[in-house]
View 1 (spheres, helix red, strand yellow):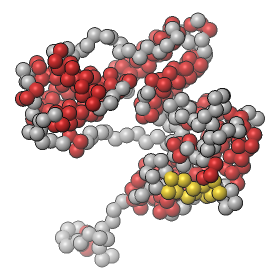
View 2 (spheres, rainbow, N blue to C red; view 1 turned 30 degrees about the vertical axis):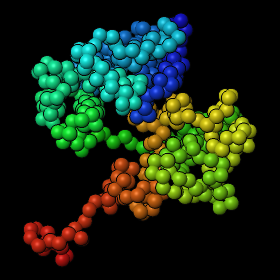
View 3 (spheres, one colour; view 1 turned 120 degrees about the vertical axis):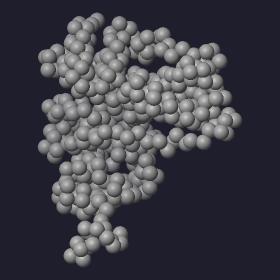
View 4 (cartoon, rainbow, N blue to C red; view 1 turned 90 degrees about the vertical axis):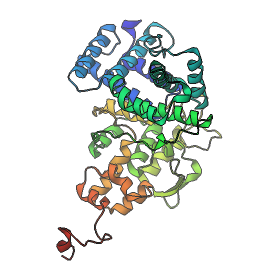
Length: 416
């Protein structure tokens, strides 16, 4: 089986099973990035089929990157987890979602173990999120039991001691996850009679390092991707319309996914929606190119059915495109690969929104107009989308016009 299994088909199956497992959209992007990396590694090796030898080479490369400081140890462990899940598909029908070892790293008393489960259940955690938080919460109570701190003696100071003294030594790279666990524990204890706990850990924010900005797609890349789509098939007609809408309107994937037939005004060439993220109304113009693409799909590729959503699955039973099983990032990744467009980490369907804003910015469209087209409430929300036009970014900065200047260097300059 191993020698006859194509790696790209195996990865498609893996990602589909991960979505069915209930992984969040943010985590799905991380799985997608790792899988893209594996495919890219195989392509460089000139290999299409899965093999243990190929995967072992990939892990060696990942370990080397970790040793050189290119990636953190936790990200290396995550990549090894994805590889283990992928390998499980070659030996069985199901993906192995279990931890690498069933042995509990932080052993606590039976009474505390029941408390941990109560906290997890009260927060309705399931799947991978439950597994991760189980480790974090048990770690906290293991630390408390080690120092002989009873439930009644856990204080705000002890929470802070755990965060500042224990975590930097034992869980480097996962402070954000740990802070979520602390919030769950603190909230649970407060709601079960611990009125002496005052600190609101929801107010704590993780200070992160600078983030490398992911460039948008260029117009040339978008052209190549669109040209790589076979528009003689229903799937090609649908995918072409989806990608073109994303590029020419900047709509979020979730809004395209829920776009209904009644949302389009064909006479005036506009689309009217209520944004899923903000619940705010948004009206955008549609070009003739976009309307033709949507019309071609509706008339030639879309199944006749009672669903109000425009974009539906191809195979029966026909239904709207659930984001867990039909991610739009998977669509653009597929056609990027066919078109020979580089698969850059973290660059996916949402990058079309940045491409849309960047194109407008470079064309000199006023920032206020771009902000309205993106459906933003505040101009400062546009900063991430204008990272390649410093002149436009400057409009997001605060000036001194509303600030009284009485002393200092800028007093003499304010009258100039």
